[in-house]
Length: 275
Image 1 (cartoon, helix red, strand yellow):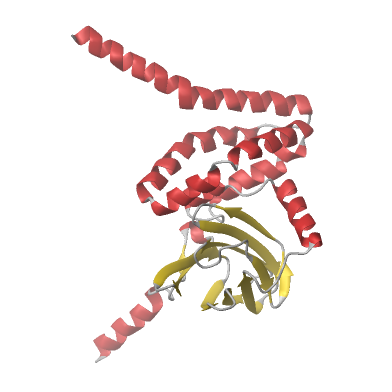
Image 2 (cartoon, helix red, strand yellow):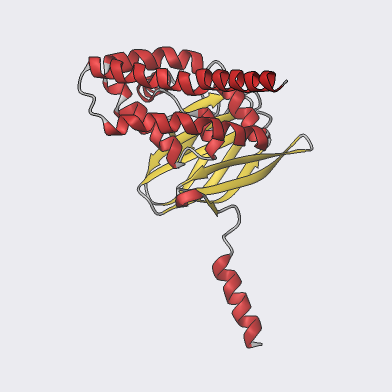
């Protein structure tokens, strides 16, 4: 009897709560809840730095309600919502108050990040039709999107969370270094127009194909390594930003394009000489 009690106690200590799976470096909690739509099951999933206790879906009003418990003042949640569940751009309310969120849409899912303040228990409502965007909220979203430069969709899908250290590094580099100069802001504006033309589709496919996800993660490693160079230099002028920026771009062109071509040509040459 004593052995059974000890085993039961060990299980209580070691087993995590349902849908509360700690991520790498304990950056957040992953959650996943099934939702039935037209006799099909879809999953609303995401990552947060708070505990998501439950999820309810109202098929008639097209509303999702999350019950959450937070011990932090600053709360962050990223959530993936299948378009079969909420087809139009969702809006978010925390305890009945609409909050600004960042939204990117793929072909089958909507990727959203929201931030809000307050400890304790909260109700998060995700609605399709019960509320409408106001012009003020649209303008605020535009400002947020412009100042933050959007989300790192491909990296987020590859590393599993917007709270992952690699994604946080990219965001901090963008906001604290690149966007602090006029040339960096101009570059990001042009880059985002190109990047968001394909990144939602790539992120969608990453979530559906684990092999492709691992391949993308591996391919991002040299890029991340090269970007760490910005952590070891002081960028105080536009000229320095342009100089280091061009240097990093040329370095990545060399790693991703020139080096593979040289390697392939060397291999072909060796094979030809052997013949």
